[in-house]
Image (cartoon, rainbow, N blue to C red; front, top):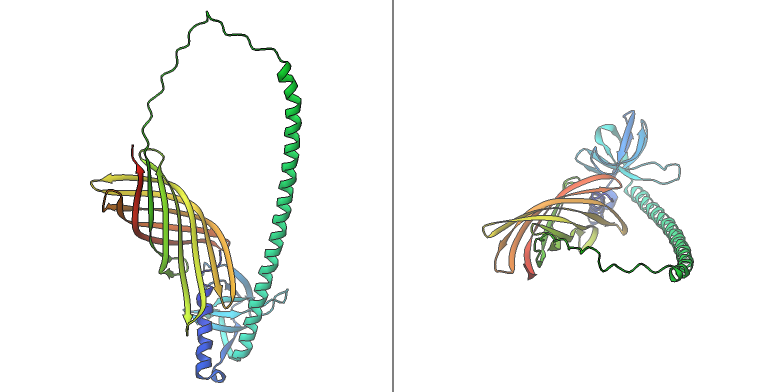
Length: 344
């Protein structure tokens, strides 16, 4: 999945440059760093569990963009493809050797963004070509299957027409007593519809998403078990002077079983949903998106207001596996639950 921290440092970097333009851009400078550790790891986010961008040997010169809680956001020297990648490095792995020029750093950063965008577009084009090839292979296999099916149907039709007739049932044969079917538990045709507000907290990247929504629908599979389908969205953005600098949106699509138990007038429930979490990040005009497997165990309570209306409060733990590893967080949902249909 895209790093949720990507837009935060980019937004901070953009704010710094905006502030520099307002005050005195020529008076600002950014440090030039040199790696002092024997081998220093440059990561995708300012955390020891962040993905590895590259390994920097001692003496490597880096241009700093920002400093955040003991981590420098830097631009690496060109790699074997000529691309300059950004990343995070620990403060104690480097030393300051001089003041850099902000215009040069901004130019290098813009080049890195453009190269990253071009690389993503090339990968997307390659993926599209692979999908088209797969579609053509499936279409060819379907045509072959239809041809084989028609051939088999034509060969079996004459045999069925000329085959011997089945013997007539004997009237004197023993009478068959039908088996008594076991009584089945009655399952109601009741549907539960939920809509409300959702607050999401990403624990891995230490970010809060105050803007969100959640929708779900459920129906009884047995008197105690319900099948649930749910979708949700969480949003976060960073603005400056009325301009949106960066934004991140997370959408989840999940389904699974739910167990509910009524105690007095309050119904408590627990559920385990699995599905997909899709993330879209946009910063400085560059967008990125990806999807990963999502596991959402959780629970909550329904407090009745009327016979068909209840107030719901719930909590689920969201664990997502993306391209960069595992990410965890929790989501608080609250809203109204409507009941339609009838319970048998």
